[in-house]
Image: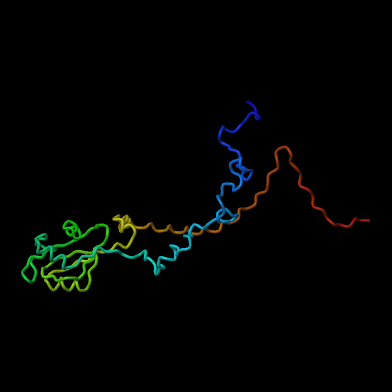
Length: 237
């Protein structure tokens, strides 16, 4: 096989459709566009939103106002009246309050209520959301309620019935939100280990006296006689 023998695969390349070449060609006269009308004209495409003249969908629905707060906290809301109904039905039973506390001021045994207990009773649907207790309805039973938030009326009604409330702490960091404890900081070194003192600077040495100059001795076998000193005496006449 050589370069001029290469051909496309059979059926991969179809010939261009030549319309408007006569009725016998199959695509003559109207060229597959039908008989007249907007779509038979050049540039006669219809927008996708056009509905034939009736009011389009984007004009039938109202405008959207406001915005969605991405930082909004969605609570599982529970009213004190609904908790009181569970007590009257016998779903919640009295128990001891945490911290060694016994019965309430009214002589009733307090009932511990939290999100897990209300989830088992069918009053809370989701466990991944924080729970907030509202003051809707009447409350006549001493409750020890543990939740993420309380309304002012729910707190006052619970305390008036001889109970108390406990607000859970909200995680402030990403690790706390995921239930991961941050790594512990390294413990400081023991105070017994004394820091090494810097070494004392060495005392300045006494100025060295210059060594006396020693005349170089002549090499052996090459001794010289001392040269006589020149004098400027005048010659005698």
